Length: 108
Image 1 (tube, rainbow, N blue to C red):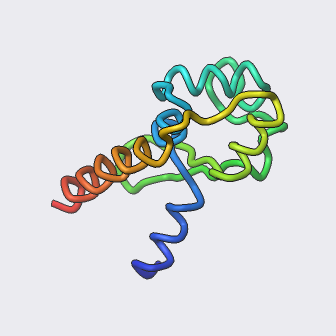
Image 2: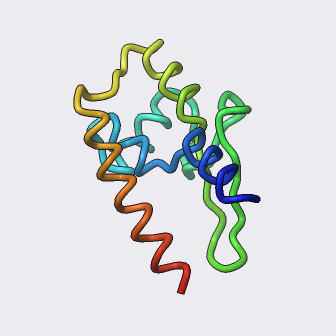
């Protein structure tokens, strides 16, 4: 995957931490919102209702995790009356900085 396509992929697909930040929530609190709205089960795994909204990522090392389709999840939650916080752009910058730091560390 080229750097540009990787960047495009990561702008479309987000972690719970990234999505939670947009909604003013921690990753755990945001995961709970997804459970309450039928997108995750009791174990935190995506449900059948979440088909097409997530991608399972299996790194070479470490345990698998899920990325969520940013726009589709936002649209779904907005349809339920759950909206991002007003300063989502600022929150996203903070998340972006953390992501870059993580990529830098993992690159070693």
